[in-house]
Length: 164
Image 1: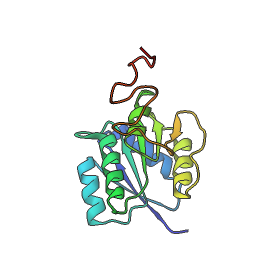
Image 2: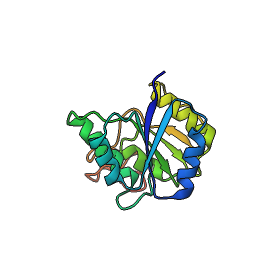
Image 3: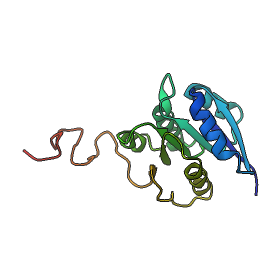
């Protein structure tokens, strides 16, 4: 099997250690770490050929959500981009992970066994396994005017999800 070049985007030393620990047992993973989403995009432009991006959603200045959204927009414009896994801090961040069009999310603190399984699934093009604090984000994604859980950008529903 060829080596999987993985780009980790995080400014948090704890998150970096958690991801590194999770992937150290994966013999076919090369891990490069950068501190910002902007540096990640530059690294992908300069070096290319990354197979996976793992991004901390809380990375400054723009965060992993914006990075994922930017990467998916580039794919729509014909630029090849690797899949992206977001590391989220709160259950409420699942909505933003879906909005950003990330391929999967994992709740922090990162469980090393769950991360390794998700990385293998994404690498192999398989569905994300059903594990605690893990989610796959395939299927429809919320757009600017699409309905999201009964609420639309045009005001078609109330913020509580009920009708008038």
